[in-house]
Length: 324
Image 1 (tube, rainbow, N blue to C red):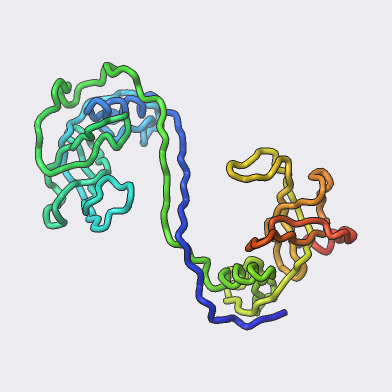
Image 2: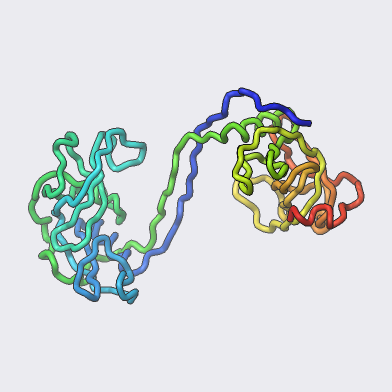
């Protein structure tokens, strides 16, 4: 079945990608974050005498491990900047601010952070700034709440700038959780909008390349081989052939499927490449290449819940070998 491209509205939806990453810290990063908790900024001295802030664990020129931690100032100079007029959630400040690179006194490299300024006219390269410490500090980069214009005085009981770090801080920070998060609006585009809309009608629709005639499922709107747009829509399946598969033995969080189970590449009849799908209705150790399967839909489901055997004889290897 071939259908002409429709003018249906392209889908759009908010999407959040999160990856809270727990990592342990080596001695250099541990010292850096522990010192921030105590309102002290540390750098590390490289083999050529430069002081890098934030500190790194390996010399960028020699790749040798470096340990020579030194105190730097809580004041510094802006080397470059960019104005952020619309702060996003979880950024350092909830009012407009400048992203700045600041070379702290005693450092040879710059650190990236936020500068609290009334407007872009109040920011310039070369201006002097100082650290504004967070009221509550836990041993994280957010212990520097932001930078603010001005010189500022030395922190109480802080050692002189450029002195060697002597390990005087107790209760060292040994690990952090890095909360990576990306909020954005996702659009699958014209081709995949048609594919998703067809799934809601329990149909699988791909697009055929006008040059090589390969049918792509799911479609991408263009043939990656020929580089031409694909506009002819083709209904494929519903049955297909298992081309290859894997047995999953580790239960995924928030996925209510008992292990072991099988996840497979399935070449639907009429498609030019295989798509992913879970295999059910058969013991996991009986799944095999060439197995003929069909989709199983749940009530109200917008895509197949899984694929099950059709009862047909297995497909001949030559019929699907180009789709593995």
